[in-house]
Image (tube, rainbow, N blue to C red; front, side, top):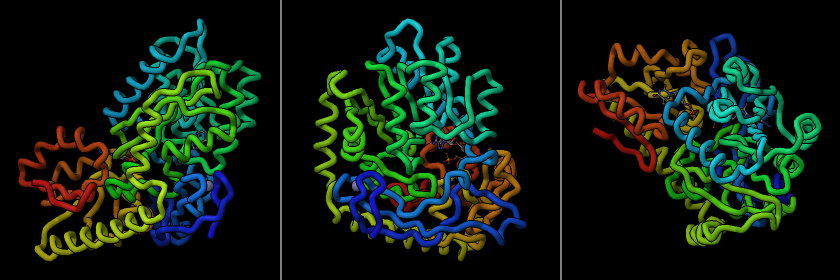
Length: 406
Ligand code: SAH
Ligand code: TMP
Ligand code: ZN
């Protein structure tokens, strides 16, 4: 039993993925001995509906000057965030000299769109290396962790904000109450918070268990987000489903009573009921689906290796750390993992220590099979890997089910 991070009720884990390393902790040989592991168990809180990690590493272990994830590596995500920014400006910002704050602003992939329109903005990005990329592009950024205390300092220095934005970061923060308190302090009376994260509904429907790793402390639903913000007299006023990261949800929040609540909120809450997101049995079934997926993937990989064929991992994603270590994938199955991010290349994957090599090596010598770890970018990848496919290369995917694509 553990205590819910949101409502303090006792909750029971429904799955353990076993010992897991830091998902973005790519490492060289000298670091193997001191590699950090934690038991990755996930619990569902019957009271507030929050799905959460039972144990999390300290935040500085994950977000520091060696953070390996640069948002700008995906062109499609750059387009996605331009649309996000345009939507905010067009539909939510009315004041004359607006001020926009984004947390987890990374290399500036979202804020660059505000900077280009000369809109007053501030990025909060604790990982100094990615923050530097944004600063070098002329995007106002401070390298700190956002919480209630920082919000007070920001208001003192810059005044209150029209919009608080966040993408794929709210679900990373275990001390969410302090963050929501910060949002409350930061926002003007008609200000809005908009944030998006991988969605619990898609996770359950498609068995995307790889959305769970050290950084992803929570999987949100409308139900749990509404509960959380209600504690701080704020209100969920709209939701917008997204295709990103294998299925995400964008939440729009306002001060209680400040704006009308869209009917989207009620219809999506109904869908959550139908999906059984409020029932323990749903999570028991999810565990069984994970075990089936793992067994199917491992027997496929073993089969291919028996035939003497080569398999290369495609993209050393954070998600792949969960898949590799939970399923038991090793260098016996994968020759290497191809990745375009320079700081991952020449290192090995966390836990299983599979070499990560430059993308060029994949291009130079196509394997018979590629295990697609970046399925959330599959449109972009299929478009650029015509050469691999015409050479007879086949994709192995595991979401929504394990299969070989020809
Ligand atoms: N928004 C980007 C980056 C997501 S990765 C995108 O969607 O592509 C999550 C980012 O949040 C990391 O860059 C990490 O350093 C940052 N982060 C983690 N905890 C934070 C906190 N408490 N406040 C602000 N940023 C945080
Ligand atoms: P993420 O899933 O944790 O966001 O990481 C994406 C990783 O995938 C990043 O290291 C870059 C890599 N990648 C490729 O190697 N090739 C590609 O075509 C894409 C889209 C991503
Ligand atoms: Zn709870």
